[in-house]
Amino acid sequence: MTALLVFAAVPLGRVQRTTFGGLPASGAEVEGPFNLEVPPHTTVAVIGDESSGVDTLGGLAMGMAHPPEGRVVTLGAEITRLDRVGQLAFRRKLGYLPAGDGLMQNLTLRENVRLPLRFGSNFRPRDIEGRVDVIIAQLRLTRVADLRPAQANAEERRRAALARALAFDPELVVMEEPFDGLTDSAAGELLEAARGGETAAGGRRAVFITAASLPALLRSRVDRRYRLVRGHLEETH
Amino acid sequence: MVGLLAAVGRGTARWLARVGALARFAFEAVASLPSLPGAGRRVAGRVLLNQLRFTALEAVGLIVLLSGVLSYLTIATTIAQLDRVGASELIGKLMVVAIVRELGPLLTAIAVVGRSGTAITAELATNTVLGEVRALEGMGIDPYHYLVLPRLFGCVVSVCCLMVLFDVVSVFGGYLAAGLIAGMSGTRYLGIVLANLTTQDVILTSLKGLLFGLVIGIIPSYQGLSVRRGPTEIPQAVIRGTVHSLALIFVLAAIIVGALSG
Image 1 (cartoon, rainbow over the protein chains, first blue to last red):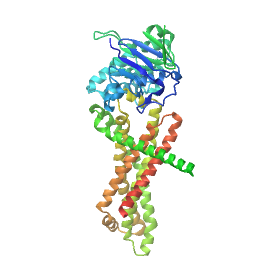
Image 2: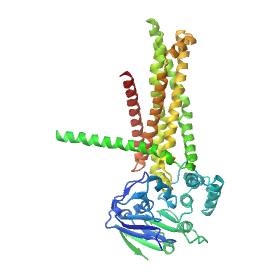
Image 3: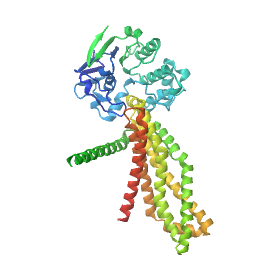
Image 4: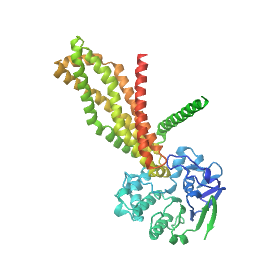
């Protein structure tokens, strides 16, 4: 089975940012190349502190950072090798929950979920509204959908950011610090929403999580857990 | 001596690198226009309308006040002197050259930098610091399309419209001042002004509107999206955006005057 996301011999300490967003590299003290695979329908979590280089993995997976050596292959493509338009179009196949949510503060939660569909698809407005209503109901956001992010609480904002990441029903979801500040039960619910259910069309989504820590309740629900120490992966059980 | 030369060289290299980065940003922003997806045009169009409302519509009062006061002051302080030497006909030349061609575009641009340039830098810097720009890119939305181009076009259209408004109000203000202060008939005043207004003046004013609008759209956007370290950098970015925009606008105005007189 072909992995949906492959990191092959990537030196995390020398990753270069290629896009606007994101702060400069955190100065990770990293030794050795990084290797990892995320197979289909699997939830993989990489845990590590700031100096481990874990905060660069999400950007690499989304093609928003460039590895000077090695390869990062996402859904069969090296995104950073595509031209700018190709990179943007490719990212619409992926779900991305960035650290800190990244919700547009001048839009309501509903408008945030609607934004990628309105900007990046040719669906009719009625179809877009239908899709947005479904996702908002799935993430239990109906009551607060018309609030702006600053008026919602941390859990509602995280749900809205995940709803937006799932707008295109992606095969692979990349989540950075998704459970930061959430209760264990809220974190569990969020993870289940990201994975989705078994459907006639196929199995659950693949989910790639990077975080400083993982709630205890979630450890058994994650298929593969790794700890990243200075660029070296240790599988934990 | 070598140390001094090295310091000057380093400073020049840093300045050239910054100018190069700004030029690249401007080129990439404009070059991204053809790749704006059809669906994205509608969304970007809404952002553009919002920018026009803020930059043009909400600035009308300020521009009317500035141009009215400026034309009144110009006429009130000069017409008596011109009359004394029998050169009151020069009031038309003064209105066209000083206000319509030079001060009108310059003051309009300064007003727009003060209102909208600062707001654009602060807004985009906040977008960057809060991770919104990164999230946009993660969703496959080009920040040039969603954030920069609507502001760029909004500024160009707004500055051009506000310049026309400034000139019309200042000519009308001069009409009132000439009548009230010097007892000049309205027909004579308008006749003098229109006789001095050439096609070249109209073209020059339009060119300045376009150039100043581009400056106000590009530099504050660039400074806003260049914030990297965090919220404490936002005020610094706003200052850089404002100062660099004003400096470039004055330099462009001087270059245009120099090119015409040369």
